[in-house]
Image 1 (cartoon, rainbow, N blue to C red):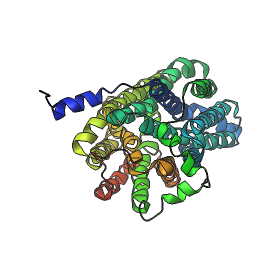
Image 2 (image 1 turned 60 degrees about the horizontal axis):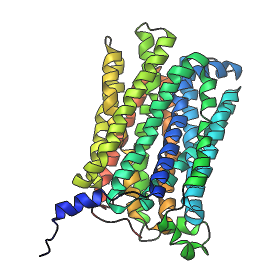
Image 3 (image 1 turned 45 degrees about the vertical axis):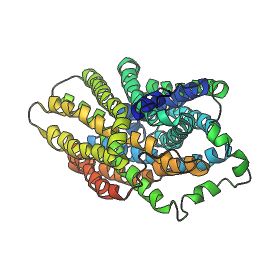
Image 4 (image 1 turned 30 degrees about the vertical axis):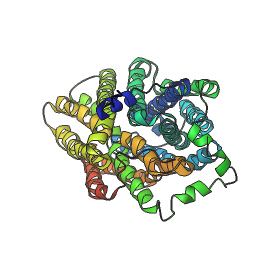
Length: 438
């Protein structure tokens, strides 16, 4: 007599489907590239104050707290403009392959992060950050698309969450390097270390092959122009979801780049008010960044389970709600406390970190909404185009810091963006329970 397996046992068996060598190596390539991407992107947040204190006078600009806030926001804004241009990598990946394009993005951001070490004027550093942003923005889309297409369906969702922990492990790594290298050798050494990701290219070149899903489409797309996959996103089938996805990521960008990225500067400010030395303040900002990163890594790991149980839209709403509460609590309340401000602010950081893991939802959700022939273009566009608007908002935050002579109120106001995100989420494409499109 043949006994039928229970659905529960089938689910467990499927979830344990083994990974082959290319899936494992490809995951570590995507995760490693995204981790080093996170390290390079967060290096600037950690060294912004000391870098500007040296470069502003060299650029004939007075070094004042107001100018540090203004030009710090301007450089963040230019970095986001560069990231916004990263949508150009998507059509290249759809036409020429995910792995090839992944290597190009890593080489690009490594080079221009490294060149920050030789900047002698603030505008030189601004140009290097703009160019680094182009590569940093592309790596996420390439790595996320690869994992979605190469991993088995039963493990794809968890793979997305695990892959996204890499970016925040990079934050942790940047904070650790700042504690060991930056505090001792200065901000230029930190940018020099930022060139290290280029070493990953050799491993990818000889150890990772293109996902079968893309290879099976090569015959279909080889006659396409590079731009055809991009214009598919605005066909009647995909137009509305493409617009919504861009808006969701814009909301997340405002919360991260206009809000959470100011955590190191806020901690240094509060530590100085508490009477700590500059060296102690720099090291405390590193500890705070590590704490923030641990909260985000935890949020990434548990996100796939929430997404399967609650659905994609409800899970993203949960993470948005956490940010809506804790950004104003940290920057609008704790930052201005007359006593114990530093300790209360740091207590908020694990929650800010958890809410910041909302970006992991896009690694899981975006690939589920598009077919293989335009998947990388959709991913790259959604995570990039909103950064042009985010750049303007980030510049406004920098101007607000200059106007209010402090970080608190301008950053707290960025939480309003999550109200818009929560209002738009019911209209998103729900993909829970559906396989990745062919």
